[in-house]
Length: 604
Image (tube, rainbow, N blue to C red; front, side):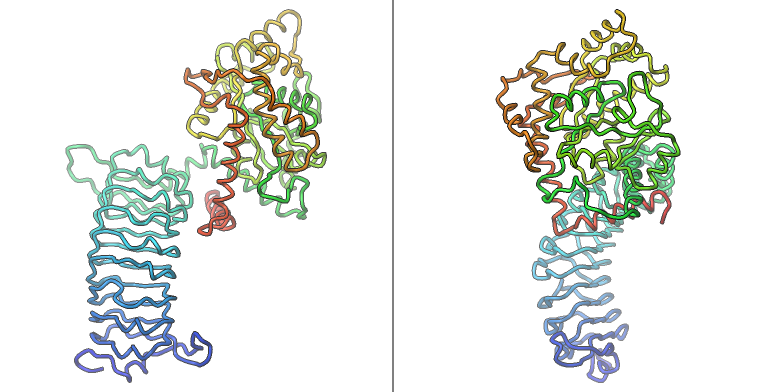
């Protein structure tokens, strides 16, 4: 090594390693050169080493790396702890994947469109004030810009980043992260962040570091991290004197674990349920199901009726299956509760013992299960496949927890919400049935708000809404008090048609049936002329406003059939398109989801 810091041929010979084939495969050559900590200033001799694939020159005094222009096969470059001022001051090697320019003197990021293979970029401890030039780096998965002068998060839209480190900058606001759908690790520690807004919709985010930041809205922290936090590192720091109270960020991880264990949200319950049944089902011999269709454009048609207890889900399901038997067949669920008066085993439910139900779970026979009122309810695979073998659409009913769980599966049902409009009359109706205790009725009434809130906050969660009208309740109650001790369960559809106008009832049926018939046509089902006949019905009234139990309007409760079909088609096509995007395959997404929920319940 010369005193002037010039790299010599002898020095290179001593530091070469990893003998292998050149990129062309025509000769053997050394692929790696590592020369750390030798106070190098001139490395121009490396222009002759065109076959290098890995170059490490850390802890030197290098200011010029133009020699890299002569290394077309270079894959990894480490030039950290030098005196570089020029950002990528060389012609781009087409296969360059990993670059480390940390601890240099760079201040401006240039356009990196020519570096399309770049997957890892480390730019810590420089003087960058803005993020730019990365728009075309469609393979970049790891970006670190720690300890720079960055004040805003931008220039990262739609990048496939899995790890992002912006530690030790001047960032005051979390923004522009919503398009980073693959993000798993985020480090925003040692900044000036005062709000947690901006972390929503990052469904794969599992590691968050917000150490040494001050947040004002302390109450929002837990809700934001419930969906992500597997290993949150957000340690509180000492609080300086402030005119306005500033709260240190609490350690979320234990709060999230406690919430998920003792009061889990519906999404977590549904994910656990789906994971359980998927694992048990994979342990069974694998077959092609009757509900499996040859095209993604034509999912197996299912209709799911949901709503609070005793709002007519089961009765309407039976009515639809009777009047439209060419399209629908009823899928009877399993339950561990005893039958109510008038219920028939195998027709309304399959009534089983707790032990039989658990054995069915372990045999992988369920698609979804849930607990309600101390009893188990479950939709079995055979209930769906039995209907599919007949070439019909399966019509089922379930509570909201079951809907959340079923949405995690590959089935694409239509979801129709039946909801009471007047609480007092709904309570009278529950009392008139004579089946429920006071605690059961209080639970049923309290869940009206849950359904209404879900409909308001998750647009498109339900495909259609049927209001549970007060006058239907009163008519039924009045009929029973005249001599009928118990309700005629099968007559629910007749009450609907007699109390509502025929045109309004036709529109309800039209919304439900036409869309399922559309799927039936894709399956080459029989009787589709009936569905075309439904399109010729008289024009339906345009009364689309129904007040829910809280006095607020239910959105889109009586949409036209064509609107419903178009909305569902758009939702389904968007889901398929998202699954087919190159940034994240369905297998990768599912794998991340499984890893997260396995970690969540302590299996990993």
